[in-house]
Length: 513
Image (cartoon, rainbow, N blue to C red):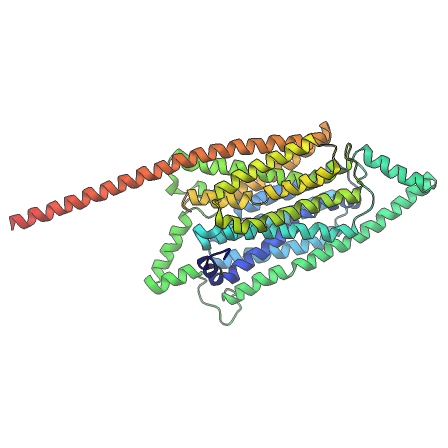
């Protein structure tokens, strides 16, 4: 069997919770991927320039970072966690529905900021809940969780594609796209004024057609908050439910209540919260962090830096591969270039699906090494064959495959190193969101000033830095392992000495009597 009986038993025991957390990550994927292919239509809708519309990416990622940072606050009880997931998933559907009503870039940025905050809460809570449920077996389930991001991100561009306008972006896709559009106009043998009128009318028609894409995505996402609400009903966490319990406890607390009483359950909850799987601010204020070695903190920092780089590449590649495709020297037709984002997210989806059995057979550190090296080689090949249209599609696919499982592998790797006692989940989720936010703005500004070739050059530099930081993380892992080994030996020696002293005391007592 691909997965052993123990893993299947764990899944069956927590199937309803696990499937619900996977479904909310589908919402996350839907929301994160639609901006890339629809950005030209949104630019036309808001009458803005490419430079202005690019800041919509920033508003979404910035609030995603804030949501990721504070999302752990809602994890303290199962009721608060599921309530936050329900509201966040519902907000995403509402945002999809109102995006067509945003007629200026400021309104669009506010809408995307709200959706980003909801996405950040989903990101933190779903990761923390799965790590809490499965502990050392969480790698397989985290891979599946992040597969659903890729699945939602794949569905989003495919839904949008039939409703996209035929032309490229008006301001900023490069002279190549404008020249191609001008040639198409000349071949139709129509006066320029008539073309301008037709083009404007066509843009209006396309704008109204794009509305349907957002409304379809809003409807597709609606079952997700319904699924979360149903889980709350099954767990008897809805206050208005007649069969609801007077106190909202999770399964672990209920088990402790049967064994040790209500006081024991509350004590267990406090100890768990002290473990660090809350929001990042409470992690920093945790008194239990005092006296820990430098390696403990460096594992958090370096793990976060690796994801800052790799998730930054994912965000920048998904956001700007379309512009790289339509700009010289590629000069792809806009419709053809639109498929690049879909291929990228399809590769991420397939890679995360493939990583589920691989994460069971191989250690996360081996998968991380392979994926980081593969990403560097792929971007290097894209730089070498920068004029090849075929390799652009092949390289996009390979890049998505290698980047797909880095986040869940890093999460499982660092949590395992720290024995699930640190703040790794909160730190890594926050760092990944910060990387996407910063890298999209940074790479976008460099492309705007230096040209399209800098897109791949930035990716190469970022990937190499991430690999170097990962080597440092492995070195601190070894230091931390040596520290834990030394601590356990000291504890064993102290115990042995105490046992011998106790035995000597008993012997003396017998002799004296």
